[in-house]
View 1 (tube, rainbow, N blue to C red):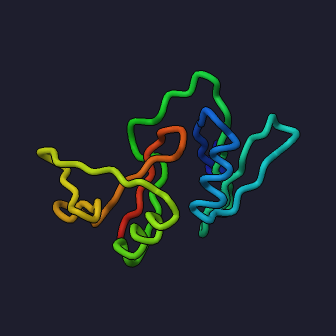
View 2 (view 1 turned 135 degrees about the horizontal axis):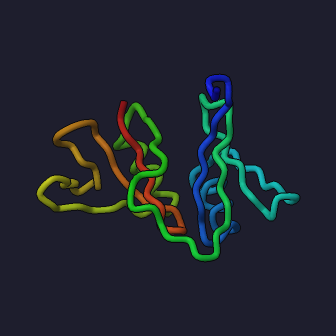
Length: 128
């Protein structure tokens, strides 16, 4: 029934303007605002023919899981470059997740580093 449907994902934020600036300017992604749809943002992600929908939600609660993973070939360069643009990365020192001085988890799986958007949603860069 839905086999031919061109599905897309979406997530909420509490400030569409801050999201537009963060995703467009800080992360350097293509962002389009739909003025007819109450300022909804369409996020163009490389390799994906469909856009990711970003919508304003007054009672937004940040996702407690990673909503977007950005594959990179050199995670250290990606993390350093994003830090230069003002992105703050998460630090973990738990039993299962530990990040190093570069905010990269290097043990037990792929190299990965997490950060948050202005609405508190988790994003990551992951070395593939």
